Length: 67
Image (cartoon, rainbow, N blue to C red; front, top):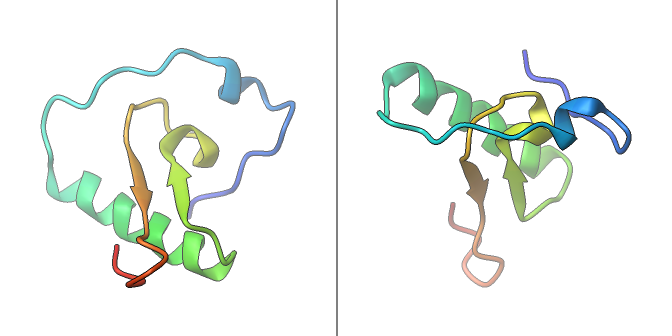
């Protein structure tokens, strides 16, 4: 289960690594991130914000509400 990292958490200051391959595990994490983003009424969520040190994010188009 993913947990939101708050301002001041050191993970938010750590350099992230690029994603080299899109795997089923990564897609599963992204699905969890979308659920978390929607639960918080957000429009975007970056991997470091949930403690994952990789360069990816999920976002929603606020006009169409599609991810």
